[in-house]
Image (cartoon, rainbow, N blue to C red; front, side, top):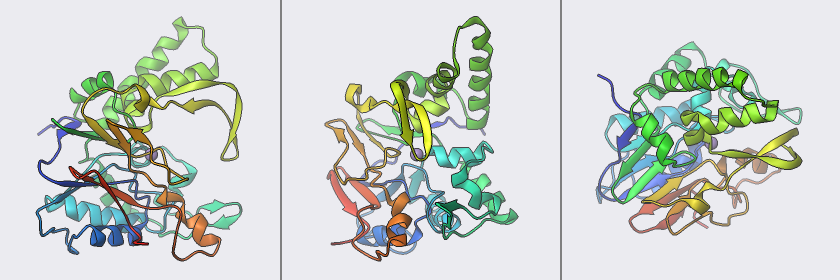
Amino acid sequence: MSCSLIQPLFDGSLDIVGDVHGEIDPLRSLLRHLGYSGDGEHPDGRRLAFVGDLTDRGPDSPAVIDLVKSLVEAGRAQCVLGNHDLNILLGHRKHDNNWFFGEEHKEDGIVVPQILADESIRQKVLAFFRTLSIALERDDLRVIHACWNDDMIDIARESSDVVTLYDEHHGLIEGSFPDLDLDDIDKDLEHQNKNPVKVLSSGPEERTDAPIHSAGKIRHERRVQWWNDYEGPFSVFGHYSILDGQPRGNDSTFCVDYGVGKRWTERRAGKSSGFNLKLAALRWPERLIVFDEVV
Ligand SMILES: [Mn+2]
């Protein structure tokens, strides 16, 4: 049976969880604070939706995937693919996904403490990711990892396989280059902004006036704040990590990624509680934010 990459979102009251990035303990705390039992049951019948990026950076991506997979299989959660999850599914090797290939990951010369995958974990992760959609929707609410773009959603709606959709558009974009007069930055931007899988899971980008230094690299592109021009039902997204605690979004959009994926940097600096970087959930329809730590 084939099913569309755009799926109906659960009805009823929801708790929409931000990018978890392998942070299993904050995830368990958050679910407890939200009132879920260990196996994901809620006394008020609430259910969960995850905005994706379950993996990378944090200490235990396999445990996060195990937990979310069990919640999904029990019908208590839904989950969309994030760009980190997609990199794994597409076989795109990045420094953040060394763990998946069984290799240590270092930042500033220091090993990031992480559980590394073996072959059986790899197979399980890939099998789970193959079951996930790229967006969830109902009349009053949408869930997407990075960017809700109607045109790209409509293309993804006709597809049932995210790898095929990605490859097909990658090929089309490459094929258009001989007719265009583009430099390498333009080509990168074409791939970012014209491939529906890229737009939906990592958002549109634009050329910067001058090169910018970001994460030890020189970049000529920056992320576009698409939500400023968005119109439509309320969209909840992750991806754009909030590092300063200031809410991102407006009357019709909300970013639920409060940056827990970089919490290991706070731990490395000696913190063990009172973290600035958090895992969050948005309660719907209450529009209340709940964090993993109660402070
Ligand atoms: Mn992301």
